[in-house]
Image (cartoon, rainbow, N blue to C red):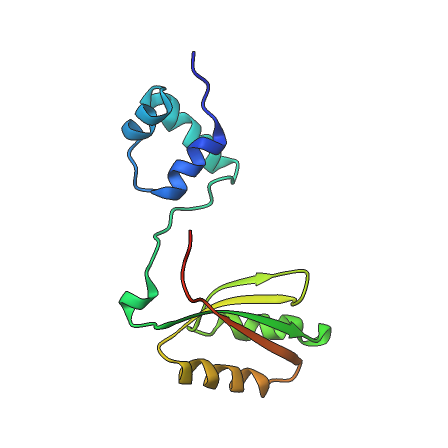
Length: 140
């Protein structure tokens, strides 16, 4: 009997979450029923939280993909999160350790939009520093 590796199954789903159970079973050398049960269990355990799509922002007119490292004063942290969650430019938002306490993935149609966004953030109380890193090329 072949055992299903959770990490192999999850990796295949991360590459293409639309793969059928039949295809996954063939790739992993198990039955479709085994895949169905394992996926259901991974969903119930919270390992698989959802199924998403991989979007090319440039094809939607967003020429600038930027990771914005933000240093926020502790007393303003929750308010800043609330503001950032409400901004359409912010696609993903992370609490981080290291150089910055917030990392925001943002999409902009132009450098002017990015600059305007940063200027707006700089006007908010509690922002200590904003450090943009523009993505030049996606490698993986």
